[in-house]
Amino acid sequence: MHRTRYGLAALLLVLAGAAAEASGGALEIVEPWLNEPPPGRPVAAVYMELRNRGAEPVAVVGARADVAASAAVHGHRVDAGMMQMYAVDRLEVPAGGSVVLRPGGYHLMLGEVRGTPARGALLPFCLRLDGGEEVCAEAQVRKFGE
Ligand SMILES: [Cu+2]
Image 1 (cartoon, rainbow, N blue to C red):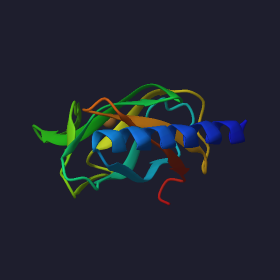
Image 2: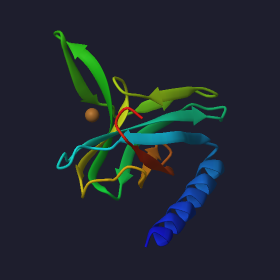
Image 3: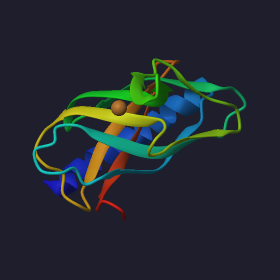
Image 4: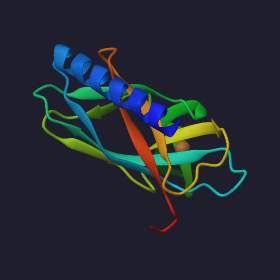
C-alpha cells in the first residue's frame, strides 16, 4: 500500500516536472514538513522552501492534498495587536529566488485532515502554478520541536 502510494507520487512528480519544464517554470519544493498534529486536531500547517530556478517569476495560486479536504496557502499578519491568518491567493516566487514557508509566516494550511498523520509519515500534496501546471512533493511529519 505504502509502496503503491509512493510510486504514484513519484510518477506525479515526474509528470509535474515535465509540465513545469515545458512551460518554462522551474519551481522546486524543498524539504516540506509539518508538525505531528495533536490527536483529533483536523487542521495542519505544512512548511517548506520554494525555490525558483527559472528566469521568470512563478506564482503559486492553489494547492491540494489527498489527505485533506482543503489545502490553501496562508500568511500571518498582526491586525489590531492580534496575530491572524489570511488566505494568500497568489504567492509569487521571484526568478532565481526563493520564498520560505515557516512557522509564524507563510504556510500551506490543510483543512479537515483525515486520520492522525503519524510521525515520520509522508503526506503527498501538490501546488498549482499560475500557468496551470502542478508541482508535487511529500511533506514529512515531524515530532513537535524536532
Ligand atoms: Cu493557516
